Amino acid sequence: MKTPFELMVAPNGARLTKLDHPKLPILIDEISDTALACAKVGANAIHLHVRDSQNRHSLDPKIYEKTVKAIKSKTSIHLQISSEAAGVFNVYDQKHCLENSPVNDVSVSLSELERSPELFSEIYNNARIAGIDIQHILYDAQELKRLLKYYDRGTIPEESRRAIFVLGKYKKNQISSPKDINPFLEMLGNQKLQWSVCAFGLNEHRCLLETLNLGGNVRIGFENNTMSNDGTVFVNNESSVKEFVKAADRIGFKPRGANNE
Image 1: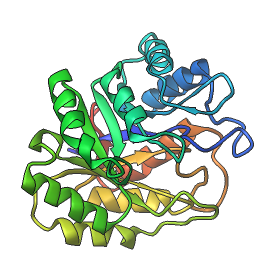
Image 2: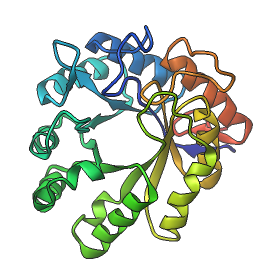
Image 3: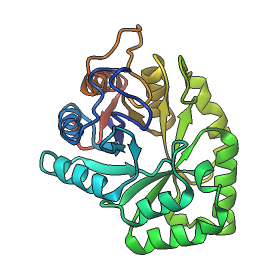
């Protein structure tokens, strides 16, 4: 028996363009085709970013709705949308995105929401009423420390006890290391949290394999990295997913939902 894990693909992000990689999916049809291709090779979830008519980062619920509809017409892969501000939007914009999400899984950057702490209660209460599961994006152990305190105080409800640890930052030539996971886990200790990891640069797969060994789930894709361990560039998102699934299988892991014999 192989150990199952959640394998989410993040195919585009908020910042990249086709100048970064010609196969970066930007248009709705490109995103939906990528979702199908990645599902076929083992991904069981997709993290969505969408663009407006000028190819700029967008939180428009209508664009998300069209993208979700296109994906659902091709595959049953689990869908998560991003409410990331990316230096463009304020917390009220993010709140509007959350409240009008076409799916029940939304990622939020804790540090971005902290710009307007007075909105915390309303955001999380509305999410609870709407049945939206929030995943918190955390960039360092101090953010995790603050998140855990919010749980302790009841500021953030237990229903949203879910996070993704980002190894590194969105900057040119960023290369993450498997040891970057350690500060998060040291801060977490034995406290309950459903956690995943994503990582930048050509060590991405190494970081994610170590995550599996440590008991976490993973997010992979061109949002964070386009290169294999040896520095060659992946042809597309699904080629990265496929290579990682094979590597995970060799150490005893299979994506949840895959043939787990």
